[in-house]
Length: 363
Image (cartoon, rainbow, N blue to C red; front, top):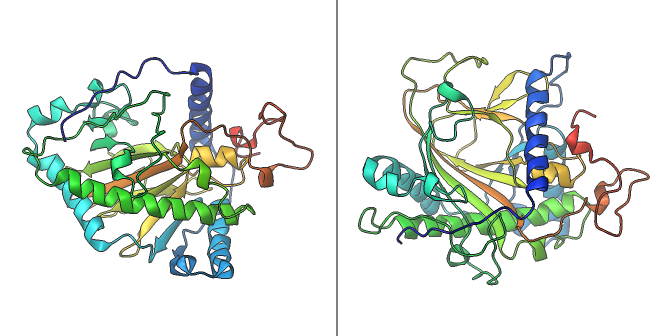
């Protein structure tokens, strides 16, 4: 598949976009600056076996949803096992991440550089969009939803984040990286199916009809990244600190939730309420799932979008594939009806009639 460029044009609502970015930045800084003594007693990243959620029993699905609800209201993170995404496709996508980073020449990568995309897609060297300045070391390739990768075939109505239509992905040429597109397509289709399934469990966890989000995910936002974190030049302490060379700076994610696949080399670190960093150690064959800013805002602050970062403390390279899942970008979103506080309501215009608590998460 050759590179495809899209003339995205201006954002349709720059005011809303700026408010969202400013709100996310304020939340991040507030979490990083928190100094009040807080207990980590309830902090936990549970392992949830979701195999019962594929059964025909609504009671079994509700049990899994209850476990998800507990995780989302405390740490905002959980692991899932027995999720249905094949080992072949998972190992395959990690292999493609390694091939992309090391088989393509600098000239071939340059043609796929994200600077050529108005949508932020394509190859991203560490110095291009760093969250932590000179401390950050990573390399990535970003890609988004395509109907061709959707096992449902899509509905033909996909729009990009800025409201434009058309495929904005920039793919390496087949002759440069044989089999790359097919392997990415296979993995993306599987993880997209899983994300839709998880959204049904999220719906149950929020006291909504199981199919509540279904009409909103027919051509969803689904940006993914292939990421490479080289080992540090000098060994890092096994005890996390705030001042060290990191792979990806402290941040919170921006869609509804994230599905993260990673190689065996650990790296994800989660900011606990006390301000200390928790090193995530996922069990084999699992995904890490975390709540993102959009879902925190949508649930009126009930579900927690937790700050995290990536630090490769090992002696080997780390590869990971985060999948940021959202609803159709043309969906009108209002506070979920089960998440309204007493006295709150949705106005006729679809706007929340009081301040959304997610703008001040500590409230």
